[in-house]
Amino acid sequence: MTTYAIYFPALAMVALTFIVLGVMFKRRVAQMKRDRIHPQKVATSQQAAALYTDVSPADNFRNLFEMPVLFYFATTVAAITDQTGPVVIGLAWAYVAARATHSFIHCTYNKVMHRFRAYALSVFVLLALWCVIGYGLLRQAMLSA
Image 1 (spheres, one colour):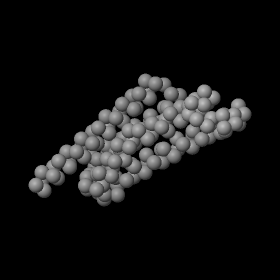
Image 2 (cartoon, helix red, strand yellow):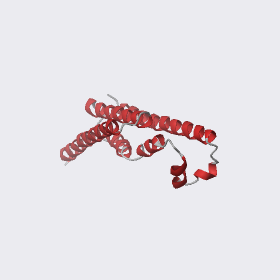
Image 3 (cartoon, helix red, strand yellow):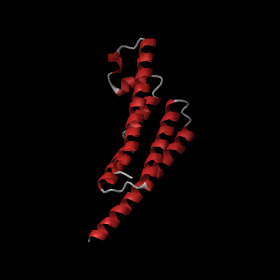
């Protein structure tokens, strides 16, 4: 397997982030037109929170810049240290699937316990990914010592 394979799950996360951005933009513009909200009335997050009725996509968009940062770093470390075997690739894709599920739930029917399960799964998968990468780093350090 080539080192480049680890970048495809990262690209999928980037795509997910832009998709959620598109959903957020579409819904916000639609509400601004429908409710005749002048853009200056939502200049701050506090003002926006008071006027927008559908904030789920915006909340999810912010979520995509929290834990996924650790995912992007994990894929970079895996590539740099040549840890791009099937376990790492599989965990990376599992993380993307869990985050995509979380985003779908968050941006559609938004049932909290369903969303929480998808989020918790993504956290455990990310932890497993880092454990595998961490073990690989320790193993490489021991072999080179």
